[in-house]
Image (cartoon, rainbow, N blue to C red):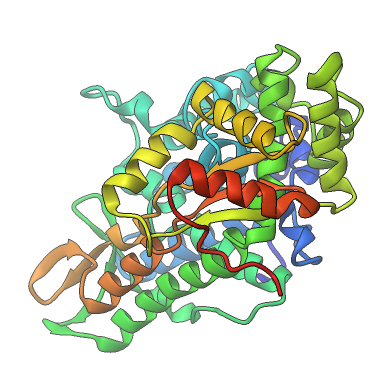
Amino acid sequence: MHGDITLAPDEAWLLDAPEVQRLRWVQQLGTAYLVYPGCRHSRLEHGLGTLATAGRILASLAGAGFPAPPEVARAVRAAALLHDVTHVPFGHTLEDERGLLPRHDRGPRLGLLLQGELGRRLERLDLLEPVREILEPARGEGAGARSLPPWAGELVAGTVDADLLDYLRRDAYYAGLKPDYDDRVFRYFVLDEGHLALNLQDRGIERPDARSEVIQVLRTRYFLTERVYFHHAKVASGAMVSRAVETALEAGALDEARLLAFGDQTLLAWLAEGAGLEGRAREVVAGLARGVLERRLLKRAYVLTPRSTGREERAELTRLYWRRGEARRRLEAELADEAGLPAGTVVVWCAQESAMKEARVRVIGPSGRRELDGPEVEALDQAYRALWRFYVLAPAEARARVEAAAARRFGRPSELQPLP
C-alpha cells in the first residue's frame, strides 16, 4: 500500500511502547469482518500508514515552498503515528454509532494513557507537549497557549488529512473493494495563513483536474460509508456489541480504563463469559456476545429511513434513542415483551444524521480562500443524509412479531419489505 515505511529511531522507540503495541489487537473496522472477511486490519497498521501519508504531505508542502521547521515536522510525524492510541475495542461503534463513551479524541483518555511508558518516552524525546497539543486541540484554545501552527494539527486530524488518505485506501483494500483516489492529490496541499489548504488554481485559473481529484476523495469516503461502515450486518453486529457493553457499563463491571486493557476478541470473549455479572444481565451480555462470535446476528425487524420521516422526526428519534439512556432501554423492553421475547433480545439502533465533514476542507481557488462547494458536494452531502436509519433488531424467528409491535408503536409499517 505504501511500500517500505522508514521510521526515525525516535519513532521506532515510540512504536514499541506497550500502549501503542496494544493497537495490534484493536481492529480498524470493528465487526466489518463479519461482512468482508479480509477486514481484520488493526489500528497499529493504520497508525503506521498515517505516519507515511503525513510524511508525503510534509514533502509536498516543502516542494510547494512551505517547508516545515524540523521540530514541527517531528511532532507531526509522531502525532500521526499515535493519533489512534486512545482507541478502545469497537471504538467507533461505542462512541460515534452508539454514544456510550466520549470520542477517543475527547475527554481524559489520552491523559490516562500518557501516565505510563508512552508518556515517559515522549517526555524524554521532548515530544510530550507538542503531541498532546496536536491530539488534544482543546488544550491549546487559550490565548497564547499554542506552540505549534494550526496546520500541524490539521494535517493529522483535520478534514482531508493524513488519517483520511490512509484509511480510505486501507479499508477499501481489505474489504476487496475498488474505489481509490489518485496520488496527485498530495501535490495540491499548501499553507494559507497558517492553515492547511488544497490549491485548486494555477496562476489565477481554476484547475478542474485538481477539483475533480478532491471530489474523488469525497466520493471514495461516501462509497465506503455506504458499502462498509453502514452495511446492515455490520450495524446489527455492532449494535449487539454495544448493547452488551452498555449493560456491563451500567452494572459497573466495565469502564473506560478497563476497556483500554482489552483487544476486540478478548473483550468479546470476556463478554461471552458473562462479564462477571449475575442473573438476567449476565444472560443478556453473554447471549449478545456469543451471537457475534458465532455470527448469529439479530435481524432487521423494523426500519425507518428519510423516505418516511421528516427532518424534525429524525432529530427526535435520534435524541431519544441514539445515546445510552432509559428511553431506548424502555422501548427495547416493551417491544420484546409485546413480542413474547425475553428482555435483552430486541435492540434498537438509531444513527445520527451523517454530515460530510470532509467537504469543509479549505481550498484556494481563483477568487481566493473558501470551503469546497458546488453541485457535486451538495449531492454527496444529500447522499450522506439519506443513509440515516432507525432499526429495531430482533432474532430471526421473531421478526414478524417484533415488526408488528414496532409498527403499532410508531403508527406505520416498516419500510423493509418482508422476505418471500
